[in-house]
Length: 623
Ligand code: ADP
Image 1 (cartoon, rainbow, N blue to C red):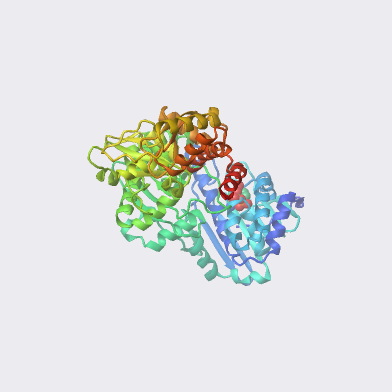
Image 2: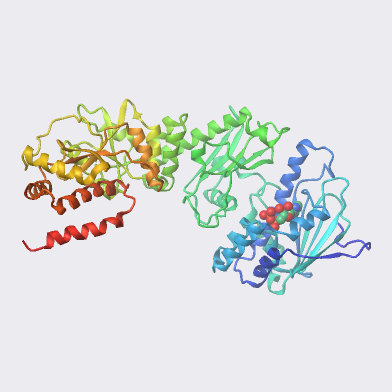
């Protein structure tokens, strides 16, 4: 191996792009506690380059060194205070060295600078790998770095890139046997600890143990010989799964669930899937297409595969490996291959099975899952007809029965009363609001359980959840809701004439906002509610639009007033005494707004304040 350039032309000096200079400055002058991650970045670059060259080899037979072992070699020299990382990956031409190691995407640099500025030191190691600035992390520990590289393209010549990390670097022609890249770090004095074979092996074990290519130190392979997902599940320790998760995701939390599948029939499939603990992992989460890596015969086919699971499982991370995938084809056609469909089916049903088991055996953990990812399951119910039966089993609801207890549709069904043929639900702004909903009055009186739906996603979900095992879902705000069982009606406190007069006043006060005013036959503890007499689906879509803050015409509803309620009786008396009583008008408007508020549909609650003040004033005035 030649590490020095040939005599030929003098090295060409170049300056880094401004963004690189900025990043280098931060890296070289900040005190990072976890500087060791530079090695993870170099190994990861080497592994990427090996992946790329292997992928190339599937279709291109005209490349340098087809027989070279795909591997990574690391070496430390304490006397020279150097570390060398060598790979047989794609290598880089002189132009590629300039392009890849002299520039960074502006957006990445900006994001990096932004993140580190915010005093986010602890997270520096997590940030570095995510913004495409990985290579430059070498300048945390080195004051001079050389990259000797030769591309896999047969006609390309080797080149040498060299920098001391300031504002500039040089490139020159060089000699290198065979394809690949050799990065040499001349360590800073305060980083001499890394020039130790023991130390670099320790770092690789910690951060790069699952890299899919052998990493050699001297003659010895120091990372796992066999990919974890290709080992028998019973031989893998819990800690090893955690370590794999960390290496895949950079997530410092432990995953909520790991699933290891290993089958040969009906499809060859080895996979480790993870459900993270949290839906969001802060600002530094990468935006990705999909979170699964797809391998076949040790070649990384897709880094961000999204076709391997239904969209609603897109929070699942992991690795999928199958020998059955056709390899001599493009990435696009891999995705449409029938094998992909079989893999997808196997992964999906296994995930459902494990989640159901989690629910049975570890209800607390399942509750945590539901809290974070329930919204994806609801989305699945709305959008994935195929998965419906499985998805319905995972659904959980708050109901009028329990406090915080979550209820399945199956449990609801098992508790229905004689004559009940529907599943009742109420839509509201929050659980507290739902529990005060006036629509609950007649159901509470009959002891009927009601699902409390408070998520924006619930509206979408209902689109796919019209019935469950023969029971229709029914919104209890319907004007003509028929309920099983009899209850004694509450005694009216106003005469029909008094009520008619009040209804007239309220109709005049609310105008187009409502369709009509009528006496409620079902309200008991609540004075008023808004009921709908049109098609439920249209109403729920309107609701979604409104909750998203979009302009949406609400079709006017019917205002029901409760003749047995003291407030309604008091208003009726006032309307009788003075047809133009402003308190009656204000109260009517407020009752209407209250109904919207509880349902989460009030666009501007603050606008109620002046009216509430007037009502308080009227109440406070001495008789
Ligand atoms: P990232 O790896 O996130 O793209 P880096 O700064 O680590 O960002 O690397 C920049 C680019 O340099 C890589 O995308 C790759 O094209 C190239 N590169 C780095 N190391 C190697 C290597 N060992 N072999 C081939 N190309 C490499």
